[in-house]
Length: 322
Image 1 (cartoon, rainbow, N blue to C red):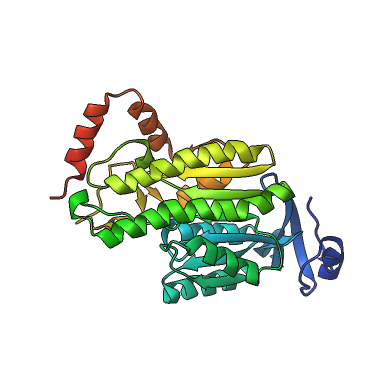
Image 2 (cartoon, rainbow, N blue to C red; image 1 turned 60 degrees about the horizontal axis):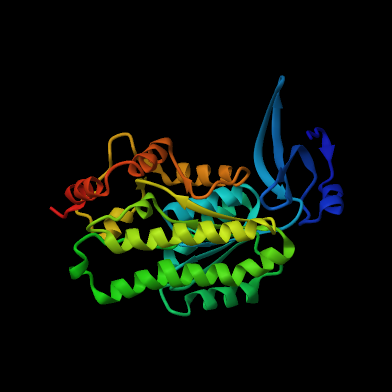
């Protein structure tokens, strides 16, 4: 629906609930989010008129408070989830280890989108990381969690025999234990409400064994398998479990994984914003797993028909440290 003219925000508050704002000329557009069962109202506050041209700036108004919890929310794909969900009216709980970076991102999102953004500084690469996250969220929240994004993760480039034991432990805890436990902790409430979304950020690396990033690829394969099976169970209750599988993405992944330089294929790179846009758009038409980007989808199909030995030899040549 589109409304124009002078509309007291207090009227909208009475009808839909929310925080009072000053009365202004505005345009209102309503959108129903099928994956959450929530109504979101997009408001464009009119700033001025010049002839037949209307100048306005857009903000979002939610007919019901919506909350998203995003791990690894201070950079890369996690930061993009935060910004795009905030633009859709979600309040955010952002989780990361880097307190300074997390604070800066949260401050920018609050100023831009005027939503609640809370910072949870937490190392999830611990055996009790998921329990600590769940307890922290429960102690702060006043509304249910509508969206959980399990995005926190990291890579390691090199021979497995040279991988430090603490890094092995951290990767297993973060990619396997914390993701599994987080789904187990947050899913029952979503099931009871018959509404909610869990997004696990995996990788196309999970579709094949990859020498020199072997443990990373194996953990992502686990996430793909687990997400598919749990997603089928949750579907009966109106809950979406999406395993998002991006390919090569412009983030700091390569630097933190120890690559001497990023190894991007020509024409095959997505930005973090593109990955997240694909992910959120797919929630209205769920498919599992979700491979983002046309080139990545073609690659996954090709891997299913090529001989495994050929794939391994090619991957080893491409990924072997120089």
